[in-house]
Every structure is written in C-alpha cells, then in structure tokens.
Image 1: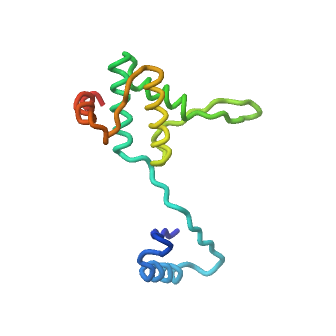
Image 2: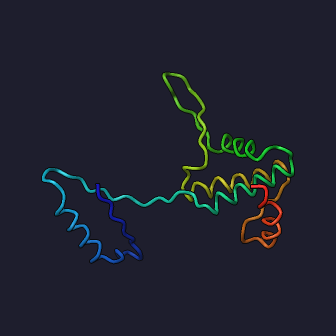
Image 3: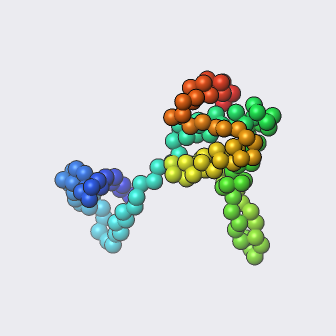
Length: 144
C-alpha cells in the first residue's frame, strides 16, 4: 500500500506537479486488477508538549491534594474519556487513556481537566502562555 501526503491550502494543492508525478509513478508499479484510492485527512496524535502539560498539572494536583498523579490521571480519564458500550447484551463502561487522542481531542480533555480542577479543588492550572507559567513549570517539572 502506498501513501502519498499532500497539503491543500487556500483551495490549492501545494506542490501539485510533484504530487501528480508521484501518483503516476505509483500507479505504474501496481499489479493489474481493481484498486481503490482513498483520500483522508491527516489526523495528528497529541503532542509531547500537551502530554507534558497534562503531567505538570497532575503533579500540581498531587502536591495540593495528596492524591498520586497517576490516580489523578486515571480519575480524569474515567471522568472524561469513558463511554458505555453494549457487549453481549450487557452495558459496560469502558475507559480510554490519553495516548490515542488527537491534538484536538487532547486539547478538549485538557480544557475539561483545567476547568474541573479549578471548580472542584480551587486550583488554578496555568497554560504555557500565562504570565505565571515559568514559575509553575519550575515548581513542578521535577515531579513528572
């Protein structure tokens, strides 16, 4: 299976000649028979920075509440990343972690965590662009 990546920006395919040349060369190398070409949007997994932010926040919650950061992680995955599924006629709650979230999914998860930690524990978790970020990062980076 051959994968060709391309970017469409402002309604135009970027490097169109290059893409078409690669497509033509790929089509020449496949065996005779019926084939399918599928075009799908590239979905990016959560970033390392997003993951690091999450663990800095959970280290802060651990420090402030005494609850282990791994338990905080599991709690929020259960709260925001669980769903009901029907298995063999029975409804069961299944839980997901954060490792397979897209960048958008991870942003949504972090937004929910940030709001919940503020409302439930009274802890303000800063974002990297906040004024007190450096101080926060320096305080908790050794705990992740």
